[in-house]
Picture 1: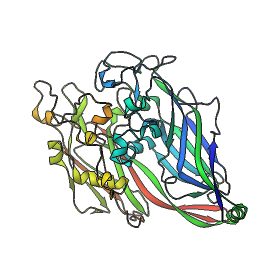
Picture 2 (picture 1 turned 30 degrees about the horizontal axis):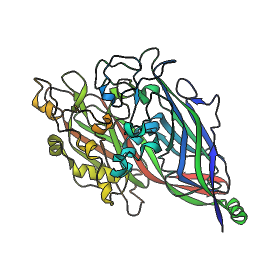
Picture 3 (picture 1 turned 60 degrees about the horizontal axis):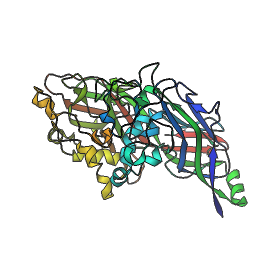
Picture 4 (picture 1 turned 90 degrees about the vertical axis):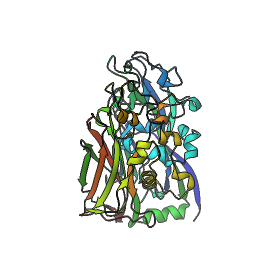
Length: 466
């Protein structure tokens, strides 16, 4: 059977006036890939378009400074977006369905928070340090190199990190075509000012608030097209089974120094657990970066959530048993000393990608180590608060100095069949120690389960088995 390769470009079906956004345009983007005898390379699929931010109606953002930490003026038109996830922070929910029968193959809620974990860590350290990921994702982590800022409209092309697309090639005829529905994030999730560093900065909140627009949207992917005989064989195939990976999302709130959660994830072939944390007050708030994957934080002497709460250990269980790790992951001493939490880092990286490659054993040293703790300490600040301080020096971009903190485990990188959690709950325990004289503020815990599904096709009928 002979194949030829072609590039397919698809415009949104709900194009309207061509502008998408939670305020200035349509809040959803819908792409429909027809049921045709072609093989889709999901890893090549990109969402492209143009991004434009507005500080308020008719006012463009003023991001003249290359180093946004230096902008401390109390102005209304200074806004930024996350430098690691970039355009992916605009995608709140991503749903992949069958075009012919409406069957849902994968539905990822809080997709942008999933990207907060996997995007900074999915590439090797060389890619991140060299700024190689920015042009692809529309990110801003190396602002000087890419000059992609919110002060003017810029183009982007970003993949979708859905398990359905990042696995094996997709028979578009067998799956009945694909409908991709992207629900957009609120404006105050994507855009923020610089108040976290400078309390006087209130950018983006005047005249109704800052907002963003997406335009010239297009979905592109590579496809393999068989010859006439091969296409006829594909169209006559009405029965079979196809396996793919998927993410399921869960949400929990941490309110104590000893937090436990029991979740009925109900997945038969569970490959990995990935989780990240952020103070709940940071979410959908112009004053903070809603895409940060932070450590547990408490207030500094100025009342800003900047001081780390030491996570003494975390434990994952299956039906009450410690699986796959039969021990607690302890990182208390390393956090106090400001050094890498090697065991914790190994497990969280392994949950996102196999860490067999040497370059995949580490994240950016700058990001992981942050600064020497207590480098800048206010007069009279308690010693234990200084030890946990998140205050940072100027850098190319603030995200370089803020640790991308995750936790999780991989259940199976050998057979990729995973563990069976049907009828058996997933348990999670996080223990921490807050600095003296402080209390735990509510933190949002975003938990993602990577698992394998099977689509069973029978004479036009589709059944998804998880």
